[in-house]
Length: 410
Image 1: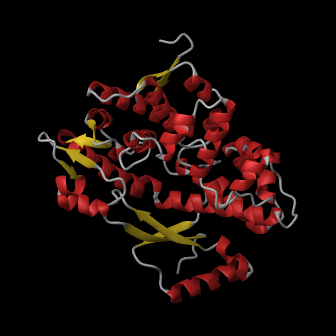
Image 2: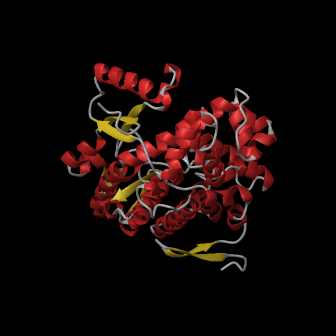
Image 3: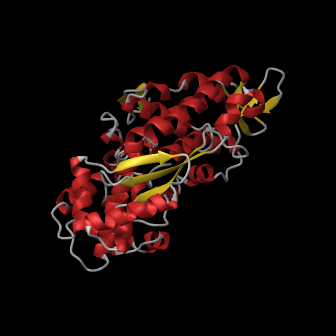
């Protein structure tokens, strides 16, 4: 083992070896260390108290699984050079480095129209300059531009190391056992045919279980109705804070938070203005929650009201329906809210939160999962497995949510 390598103890996988050299240098970099201060599941801890793990946990775990997958493929005769292995591990290690405070909430409020995928690639390019081009191969793999396409599939596909880790990790920390995935079985059944990742037929039931677990975790954890309410309220708080800041109303906040609230930055601003990247990198969950605690006392009644409700965990009531609520009911509810809270119609969207959630465990024609049989024939999962089960998992389930203050549903 490299003298500069380290070992960490992970609650899921036990001891994980962090190789010395570029891998350890990237982990110790401030860009990556910020992931320790960004929760993996946002405000899900308001429903599942144990769900306090971070993006740092997940990224290191996913890299560990990549290391195991590469080892399995090498043992099956596939030539993966040390440089390629390192590139794949860097790609998965940094795949979430662009996430902002409270993970997805920031994408829909403070930093608009800039996805965490865009920012992850941006961070990787910045690090590549800093490390004199040592991330060139990792970036190619991350973008899917490298000739060994299966390496990209290990980073991003319907059966990648990212999904396998987050399902297992989120299940562990939330305590929702139905989300547990057969990690060892799936990884040991991986193979490569014609430059594509396949799963040997002996692993087909583990793959089915993986997809069922994924659908279950979306309904039970990620789209739990109280989680939806908390996340939507957080988004609205940040949107209100941004609206006030851009109208020159003073708000408490760290310098990083204030800069991002007062401006509408896009990806070009991240590339051209070092202060934008510095502010985003400095911002984490602690900045946001510290500000929300202070905003409870702000003179703006909407910001104060929403902030107080989040801090006290007095969340909006939520209904998740198979069909949209009828227009007459919506109109009646909106009139009631305007009257009860004495607000202007233009501010109604802060009290009447609505949207659509979709759950699709397996997408057809989207980097399909292929099954390899002993006679070397390959079938797509939907043709190889229980058609009833996989067809059901391939259907997009769509539901409509409505979050309102207590007692406002009529």
